Length: 455
Image 1 (tube, rainbow, N blue to C red):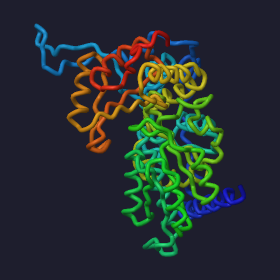
Image 2 (spheres, rainbow, N blue to C red; image 1 turned 30 degrees about the vertical axis):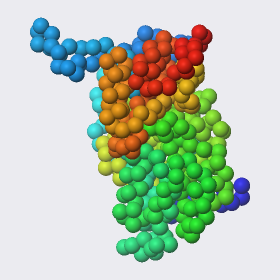
Image 3 (cartoon, one colour; image 1 turned 135 degrees about the vertical axis):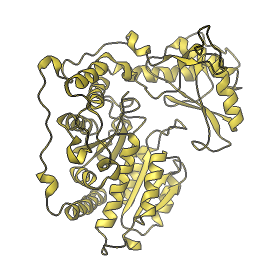
Image 4 (tube, rainbow, N blue to C red; image 1 turned 45 degrees about the vertical axis):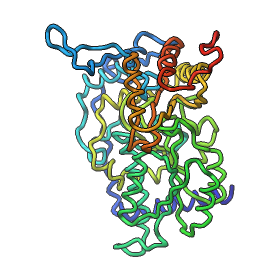
């Protein structure tokens, strides 16, 4: 534990040093905080949070959809024919996008303030509503501070541009980061595209040396960490991989952090709000939030809204606000979205039955099939691109919106159907889905007692 503490202190020192050079005149501390006119009590977007003990009719709103017929059929009036369909391809795991409290908060914010100050957060776009959301998310992830970005993609690229800034602003030369001053970043082979793009930017600016370790292979990661002589080391991983549906070996990563003294960054995009007693993600499940240095997440999936966040230390927060390019050069999120996201986070914390419902659906899917699903993301590899497209067409014809996942999201020989399960899906929904899947994916359903008598 002594070595881990020393590594954390070293990173805090490097980040603090970079921030001191960026804001050497102390101007950012001088900038006043934007505050909006106080609304009346009945107009306050964050007042009167209404929660429920179980699902309501609104929870099905985002699942029971209509699509235009792909065969270009027309009605007598010449309009495209619409077909009802059940959505199994979204990421709204808790179905919060249609929650009455979330909708009400967004509407109230729009009526009271319009879309809010239209500026980057650094200039004048950061309001007390943005700050309240950041405080809530920091608390959920047991961090001192948090940054809210317009999207999850922007959150990752803002973090990596800031990480590159640690190398640049601590370099002996103002023109070039020396080889031994670069940051060694170790990334899982199946990390999200936003992580990959952020790393490419660091490489392009000659701030980092990037190592890709085999997916969830801790022996390989241990080996390449041991052979790296750079002082500044970072390991970045998704907590739940979006195309595979499997979890990172998070406890093993924490053990390697103690051994190799690296900065550990976890992207909780698909586990924020879904996992943990309070929705604090997979790190809350294992009670290791204090051993994760930086947590990146999104408000666009289980949050049911739009946006991303970086939960971190105060020093990291200060530096990101200075040099996180996708944060400082993008207009801040509109107030109706921020109010909705705050409310969604509160509802996710209070309505714990939604998380339980999601995991009930996972267990039910496993009971109905031979597939060893471990998360709400069910990845069904079918082969090449044509096979995946045919399987998706079959599911669409049967009334289930399940899309084919093809390159560049996956390799050409591992195209698949990606099924996502939510709190609002029912046992009957799953039975119908599995029946349709069994017709295009051989071996998915057990041959004996193909439809279990009990669920």
